[in-house]
Length: 166
Image (cartoon, rainbow, N blue to C red; front, side, top):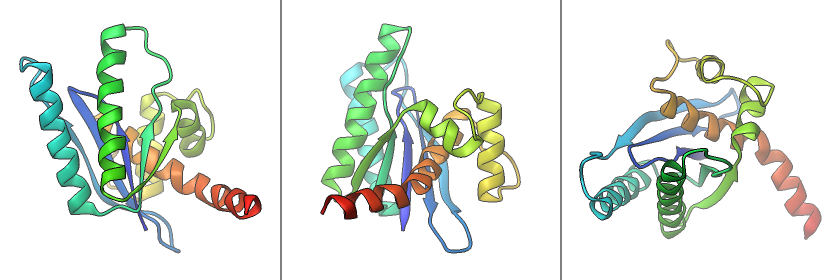
């Protein structure tokens, strides 16, 4: 099963696709989608949407894990993150993927063991958990891979809860 993590953003949208395997998770693709800050907002959103759609077709994940927009000091940043997040979720559903959302603290707890982990700790743990030669850069890419790893960590509990609810 492939899980695609998305760290939403309009200027930089991180993505990290991880394959769940019995011997441990494997990185499939990690990177960042960018849009030019000087372009008009509708054009940037359309470009991001097209790139997300192409990524979903190329990677064919079963699940897309998106960072939940939890808190932003800068309202302009919060708006663009929210718009990018909405695009990611809508495109994922249109591609037939399950969508899961996690807060930054849930992600940090799952990959680093505590919700107060800093960016460098998350990058180092993503490197360790995926057996990468170097920490993923930029931080948006590492955060996206961490989202996919977070989903894999939560999946057994989610399945058990779903079984119990039936």
